[in-house]
Length: 328
Ligand SMILES: Nc1ncnc2c1ncn2[C@@H]1O[C@H](COP(=O)(O)OP(=O)(O)OP(=O)(O)O)[C@@H](O)[C@H]1O
Ligand SMILES: [Mg+2]
Image (cartoon, rainbow, N blue to C red; front, side, top):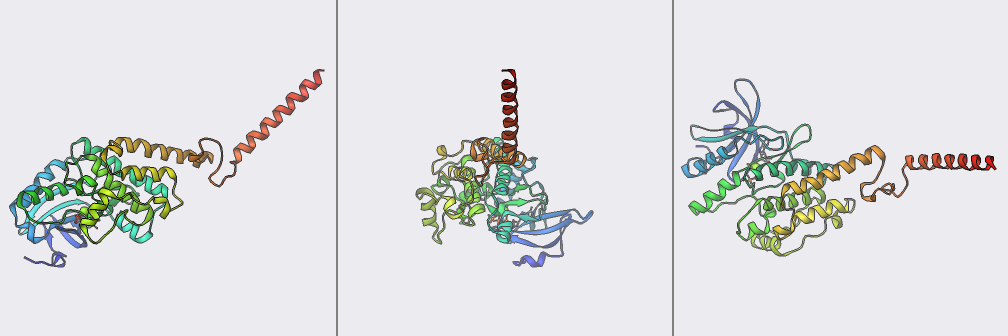
């Protein structure tokens, strides 16, 4: 069995042909590929050889696949099948050309409306999965894929749980996800609920607006301590042009105690939808959503329609005055 992923390029794995390596995670390689019979593009996640031969590891993967295989949501990456071909164990998924990690690497921090749209997509996926009783546990920029129409899709539902279960059942030491996104309760080994994913989404959004994660250290124990104890620097210190509202959302997601975060993805969605509809009315009427309907533009000037309204009122008032004077 080869230890080099490049050896799989050009070969077939089950009903798929492997085209090229996209990336590598802790326990798998991800390739672009296509269905050999009809050319449909797919992403193939192939377990690293060290895990592929381990029946316990495979069994946990298959169980998680069963749990999430009927997930059908526009913001969740669809898993097409799990299979084994000789010594190769693989997942086939829909292929997406970009990820939030790739987008940030190329373009740097994103504009506010883009961040809000992506957050809305991820929150939709989390709401759906949490209602089905599944916690993701590894929300991060690499697990958020971007479709050609700009839609965010969350990948790897259930996988972190399979790995965590394997680690605790076998005592194998293995890296689960990245410690930069660990919620304080994850860092402390406490019981998790969906609010842990909301914390990781907070880290993701912080990175999307500032370019950096809120806490970083090369020492994992120190990093875990920071998640538990240290307040994050306010995003607007690093990125002054984002709104106070987006900053408040990010900081609320990053609250140390789950009770101080949004209590469910649904609550977050309600707030994001409000921002999006306020932004739409700004586009239509030139109103600043943060100005509380006072008719002041973001740059402090009044919108044109307000001047027109004032002019019409003035004309009406003059007409009334003239009419009254005429009666006398
Ligand atoms: N369905 C997909 N379509 C396109 N690219 C994908 C797909 N799934 C994963 N990738 C990309 O493949 C790379 C490796 O993914 P993988 O899930 O193995 O690792 P990871 O998410 O970076 O980290 P880890 O799984 O170790 O926590 C990532 O850059 C990811 O964006
Ligand atoms: Mg991944």
